[in-house]
Image (tube, rainbow, N blue to C red; front, top):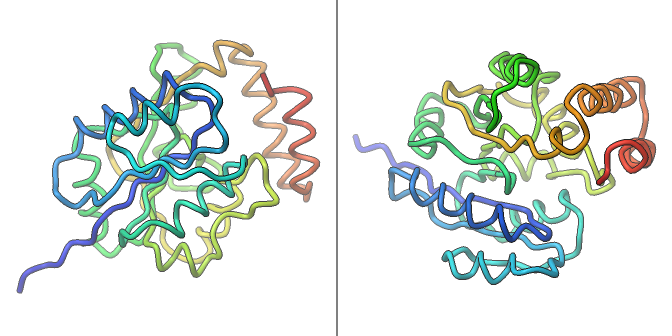
Length: 234
């Protein structure tokens, strides 16, 4: 009996990312090893630079919508025609054979999961932080690790909560952990350390920790966003 492999839709939310969009689309092209990646959807939230031009030139399908990563990813999911949705941040690069690993997880019965993560720079603190992404617990999850999920499960979960202007990935994954067994794949995506470079490694991680803590104790999306704007937004 022949196994019918699902098709993958890659969804990348962007806003003024002319430098990084070229890198991630080239990485997808170079690291795809099957014919099951059906489409790459770049969901633009109103870029004023050459992001849209660069994405189109690289062969991605660009969808324009309002600003807001949760909204942008929901729009991409609604348009996607693949069986598996693969959400990827623009400054996160997938590993070689990423599509084959996702498909293998699917054949093993997993409906949702992510890769481990490493940063594009060497720093002891960041290396330690990245090591924890191999642990299968929701506190160690984040959007920079990318996310694959069956479209049917995504729809059952009602997608991302658009009230969250930040922390939308964590809030969504928190719900998903209660709905399906989450798979942490063995390979690693490589994510940019650009925010740490600008804000300082210890300072930024402290503020991320405070956002996690505030959410744990019941802070709503507006409270989290105000904290982000005050302490993290560049």
